[in-house]
Length: 226
Image 1: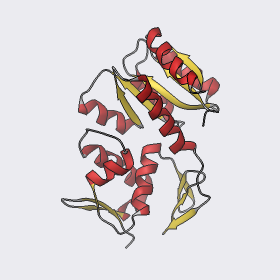
Image 2: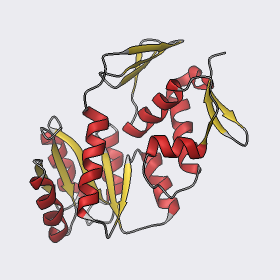
Image 3: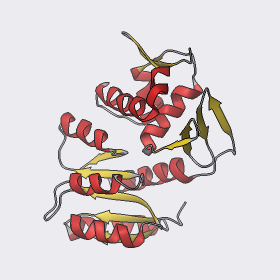
């Protein structure tokens, strides 16, 4: 997975150096940007080799939210937001925009590296060359793509993993806690609105087939073709 470059976007040079030193020690190639405008310039020039972006929220010239919006218009590259804010509403807002994960400052550099490793493995790691068709919703695990009636549906990494988890458990009612534990798969302390927000976006992207994701009142969700 270390063939990918990681773009570190933070206006604090000491923070960039700290993260860079730990990632370089793990064999990653690093690109840096000291503000939002530079981040977008770098992404446009190097998008074919950038595998993940570590993006600070509060920056001069252009903040992290603005950078996120613009990148998501053309790419689903995994993005981890680095934020000093701990407000739940901010996290929900970020997930709406397509954030894959949050890491709150201050953080352990070793934990950050572990999460970078995990996300890159999930996004680009070896997959079985298996294609499954769920009544017109086709998921290609090797290519990590989803098509609906032959048309590609653009999903963020988290949206893809959530949809795949629902499909893998077709006809099984899944509680929100179980979904959090299996899709977010770490000690996420947010509430179920995070899941509800992602489900809303997935349904919209699936169009008419979004109805296959059923809301189980008082429980959670279930994928069922009927």
